[in-house]
Image 1 (cartoon, one colour):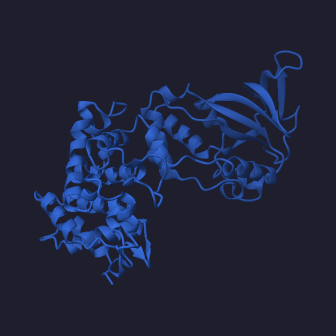
Image 2 (spheres, rainbow, N blue to C red):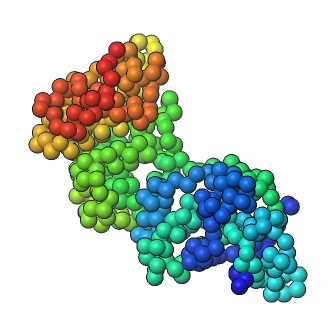
Length: 400
C-alpha cells in the first residue's frame, strides 16, 4: 500500500525535494536508522559507516527522549529523509513514487510513495531515534505528534554521502553558552541564571556567547562552564539521579527569580561564596583593582604568571573537589574546602605540569580537570578522607 503525504514540491538548483510532515508513528514505521542491517545490501556496507556517523545512543536516551517526553512545547527542525528503493537503484517516478498536484502545474499536492521504498535519515538520525524511543515509552501521547520532513530522491550512494556532507559541514551549531542563554526549560540552567545574578563575582561577568574565554575577555567564566560545574555540585547534593529529584524537576520553566529556585540556588551559592572568599585574588576583581584577564594571563611587566583557578579547568576542578567532600557526607565540608583552596599554590608554573598544564599551556581536558581536583584535595591534606575524596586524590599525579 502506497504512503501518501501532503507536500509542497521545491527545487534548489538541480536538487528536487518535497516538504511535508510525518506523524511520529509514521517515522517509526517507515524510517530505518543507518544501523539497520537492511541498508547493508543497498550501500554495499553498513549504513552507519557508508552514509552516516555512528548513533550516539547515550545522547538519545539521556537528552533528546526526555526533552520530548517532558516538554509540552518541544519542537524538532526538519528531518532530511532520502527515499531509497529496495533495489538500491535511483528513485523512479511512476514506479517508486507519484506526485499528484492539487492544481495543474501546481507545487502543492500529494506524494505517493511505493511501500517498497525506504527512508534513510541523511540528517536527523538522533532525532529519529528519539522519536522511536519516545513512542515506545508513551505511545498514546506521541503517536499523533508530527515532525517536519524534507524528502529527497535517491540517486546513488555517492550522492547520498554528499547530501550528508552538505547538511552537516555547512551547518554551524551555536556555542553551548549561547544555547544555555536562550534556554528556559532546563532546571539546571534556570538555577544557573539565578546564581549569575546572586553571586557578586558572576554578576555581569559570565560570558553567554562562547565556550571559552578570549585572552582579553573581562568575564570570569563562561555560562557553559558554570552550568557544567552546577551539574557536578547538584549530583553531590541530591545524588546520581539528581535530575529526577522533585526539588529539581519543580523548577522547569520557572522564572530564575522564583522562590522555589532560591531553595536550590542557595546550596550552590554557599559553595561559590566559600570559593571566592578563600581565593583572595578574586577580591581584586570585586574591588576593581584588577581585570579577569590579568588573573588568567598574568602581567609580563611584573612577571606575574597568572592563576589556574581563573581558567575553566580551575572552576570545574574546584566544583569536583567540593562535590567529593559533599558526597563523603562530611559535616565540615565547607571548612575542608576552604582549607584546601588556601593550601594550593594557584600560580601557573612547573608544579602544575601533568596536572592542569602541559608545558606552558593550560590543559582544559576531562583528565586534566579530574587531576586538578585530586591535586586540590591532596594539597589540603584532608583528614580521614572518604571514598570520593580518596578516589580523586589517587587520580592526581604527583606534582613536578
